[in-house]
Each structure stands twice: as structure tokens, then as C-alpha cells.
Image (cartoon, rainbow, N blue to C red; front, side, top):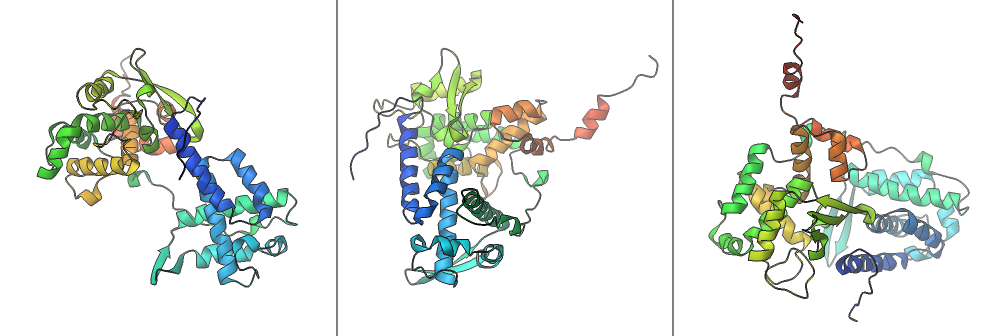
Length: 366
């Protein structure tokens, strides 16, 4: 495979540019398996949704086309790419409903001589429905299909997300988490060997998660030049490549400087902020594992029950609201698209009714 060289004139790091390139290659591989008449739709997706969403939509659409070829009489094609536009135009809403409501819920595939059983919940089915709705609506608007069949798609009931179902660390568990990463308490003898070499890195990572509510990919993509200690700020790239400048507080700044000065070592060719012991950028998987390890100890549970980085994002949101910050300020900090997402975390404020009444005493003598 040819070595990749970036000529990068954007504000994004070379790592992020390479990530985008690799995702584009995956998307092109999917597009090559689709009928030629879907080219207009793939161009539409390119300008309207993020890379990850494009990839997910095309995966779902290819899966649907494979279903048409392998499990129905709706097409004579031998492979998805050969499904004709006339066959696509003959598809009705009931055909899509049967795909989503019957086939997709549980299906089987023989892979390497072994039967694999796939099961989808309503959230997965809803995403597949969104992908197909997007495609069929576009093809109707693009005058490729005579009718819009999407109003006939059956609704997929999604359970309302309850505040009590949000998993996050409570204040005492958060304190315990920071103590665990600082002291190594609860780690096995083998883990302590690695902890001695990475404890400052791990503390800086955890502080960034619980202070700023960063997404995992936002943290992974941090580089040395993401941080401007003179101005006490750092830059992250949000979803859809939105650039955001975050202020550094004293605790987080001190933790990052300790890591840089005392532990990171000199890797002059590596631009990443957080490195593995091999001197390469820490992967998403490695960060998930270390967060699961430390949180399981803090919560006094099994390693399997430890939390993901996303649960630390939930912890940041809930803790900030508990401490009295406006949900709109927290929405802005965490980059929630909708304030209703942030409102879910407000329900975690303890004794909120008692606090309101206690602080709203009416003095009848005045």
C-alpha cells in the first residue's frame, strides 16, 4: 500500500485529515456496490450530512438492496448494483415495512460455515428506517421515482428516554475516581506496573472528560498544538468539523503540564497529545478500556460493568447542573444540538424540590 502524505492547509491536524480520507475510501467502496442511479443521492449526502452519517446510511441502503436480491422476488438482479430503476420504482411501502418489521428484527447469516444470529432493537430499526426514508424521498424529489412511498412506512416506537436511565457517576464516585487514578488504589499488581508509567496521562484524560464533557473522538484528536498555555485555552473539533475554543481551568492545565513535563517523553515526530507506551496516538479502544478500568474501581463493581467515556460526558453534564449552572450554558459547553437533551440531566439534581422551597421562604412580617 502506498504511503500517504498530507498537504494540509486547514486548521485540522494531519491525523484528522487522514481519518477523513480513510472514511471516504470506505464510503467509495460502498458506493461502488450501489446502482449507478444512486449517484445523485450519494452526492446529496456528501453535502448534507457528516462523514460518519453518510457511511451509516449507505451501509443500511446496501443491506436493504442485498435483502431485495437474496430474500425477495422484487428484483431479478444477482447483486445489488444490478437492481434496475424500474424494479426500485415498483417497491411499495409494505415491502419496506416487511423488511424493517419482520426481516431486520432477527436474521441469520452463514459466515465461514457458522450461522450468525443478528438481532436489532427499535433504535437500530429506526436508524435503518431513516436511511431508507432519506433515499426514497430524495429519489422522488429527483424525479427518479413516480411517487413518494415514505408516508406509508410504519412508525417505530422508541421508548422515551427516562432521566433515571441515564448512567453517570455521582459526586462521591467522581471523587473516588480521581483518587483511584491518583493513588492506584484497587488496581492489580500487573495494572500497577503500567499505572506507574501512565498515571499522569490517565489523570489528564479523566479531567478533560469530566470537566468539559468531551466526546471520545474529540479527545483522541487532541494534538500538542491544540493547547495554547499562554492564552490558557485549547481547540477541539466538534461534530461536522465545528471548531471550538475551550478555556483551561487551573486543575486541568496543571494535570496536562505534569503529564507533558514528567511522563510523556520526547516523541518529536508524534503530534498527538496522548500517547501509548509505544509512543503512538492513543486509540479510542485503549481510552475506553482505561476509563472502564478506573470507573469500575470507583463504583466498586466488576470491570465489565465499568463506564464508557460517554458516561463521563453524562457525569459532566449532571454535575454542572447540580452545581447550579444553567442548562443553556451546559448545552453550549457540551455541544448538544437540542436543549431537551441537556434537560434530561437536570433531573439528577438531588432534593431539587426541597431546595426550591427552602430557598423561597416568604416573610409574612414584611
